[in-house]
Amino acid sequence: MGKVRRQAAKSSGKTSKDSKTVTPGASQGLVFNTSGYGQHILKNPQVVQSMVEKAGVLPSDTILEIGPGTGNMTVKLLEKCKKVIALEVDERMVAEVQKRVMGTPLKHKLTIINKDALKAELPFFDLVVANLPYAISSPITFKLLLHRPMFRVAVLMFQKEFADRLVAQPGDKIYSRLSVAVQSLARVDRILKVGKNNFKPPPKVESTVVRIEPRRPPLPINFTQGEWDSMLRICFGRKNRIMKGEFTNKKVLETLEKNFQTHCSLQNKSLPMDFDFKELVIEAVESSDMAEKRARQMDLDDFMKLLAAFNERGIHFA
Ligand SMILES: C[S@@+](CC[C@H](N)C(=O)[O-])C[C@H]1O[C@@H](n2cnc3c(N)ncnc32)[C@H](O)[C@@H]1O
Image (cartoon, rainbow, N blue to C red; front, side, top):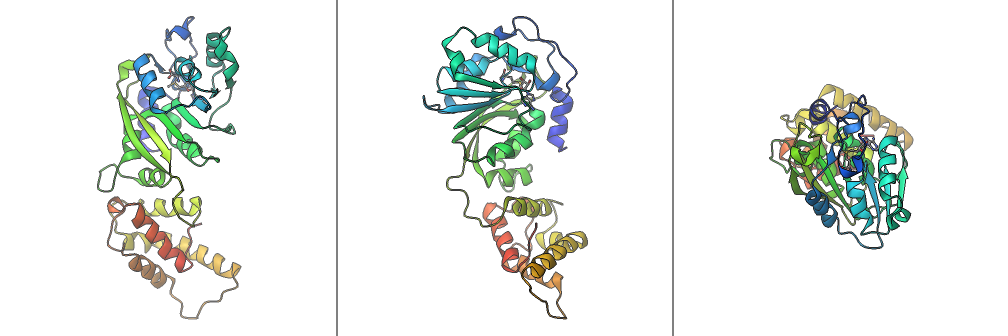
């Protein structure tokens, strides 16, 4: 578990599933002691309103909401769109939302699926709007971004530190593999800071709402997501190492050479007797002009250039 997620889990209680108390009247925002599943209910209607507005909802939209909780955001979304599909892991919360829309015209537009969002198959959706349980921030973000067909816009609330990493740029202290991986799939903008007191019960961390818009068309890259992720993992392995050092590390070389041999044998290619794999790796890194650079200084184009230089020489990461 990464540092930010560990901190979130520890300080907001967003991963513990031990507390089971939902008080009567939760649908009016009167929720206490609901730390299980990260149940920090957004009680400020202005924040709810602002998130809904930033999503740019059209009357024809199907919206995915992850973790509707007691439904504060759900009802606002239902008023504006064709359909809301809500994925909620806690059956008590499912009952709360159902109770809230029961007997209103909105109920026909709502489908609630009582499942863990990480395990459920995602339905078709145009937009995704959610005050997420922070413990699942990273896997759910990638699950959404890799879902097809691509959604139009996501408006998501994260722990502040996680959101900061999503928008970080080369040279920023917190620029990381997460920043590059997400920004290669989407444009990410920070839109709202949200203090602890906007929630009931208040978490121990600050929050930030971000707007995510998938790249259309996607980046013109002809490598797989798995290969891209594996290369970024190596690049950010030790942030202060220059790329030449990172890729001539013994373990990295061993893995890459194994992949190289597999690809060669798949293509029935034989290698000269005096073939030196390390030399080929150095040649690739140098030809990309990244040999002396560190991951924290490299932008998206730099990483793409580097991967292309490896691939041109038959070096693959997966
Ligand atoms: C931070 S609360 C947000 C509640 C509500 N959307 C709001 O803004 O007031 C997170 C919600 O996500 C639900 N949840 C937690 N883990 C989940 C998971 N893996 N899949 C689906 N829902 C989950 C919790 O039960 C809770 O209702």
